[in-house]
Length: 232
Image (cartoon, one colour):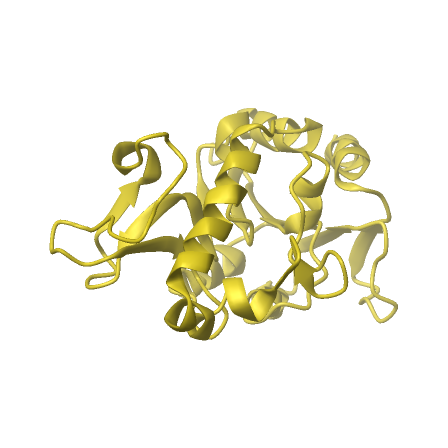
């Protein structure tokens, strides 16, 4: 018998409990940098060294972080459901917790890619001398500078089409730890079929949330625990 298709859509709130700071911390600053300077296509053009150093620091932070109970519970659900994770997060905590199908909308922190050919993607650990740092002068096999494998603000989201297809085929769709304010990812709810059961786990859910959505007003670890209980 085919398993029920459960699609989990996660944002920064699920990783915050693992100590990963979000884009929106500190009033629009990220680790004392303007987001526009370190996470945009224009910022990369202006100062690639700054951007590389910024993501080097993010990798060091990630290496020292651990998946939390929410990540592990989602991975455990694969025993009973056909689970697909769609995430806005660039960390690898879902994978490290054991989730086998993870689609990253905004890129992956532990990967880098060529500036000459976006399809030339490498593991940072295979290129970096210390496993986290990439510098000006580190080049791909075509001789071009390597850049973070991150979807910067101002760039297209290449995995969006795949995410829409997964969402449209979901039997259950659960949103965890995202403000639903970052587009185009936030538009995924528009592609959920009318008969699909939808859950939202967020300690501060939007006021205008549809009454068709089951809201669990908790942080991710508590909310996912309750979600699993509700599934039965």
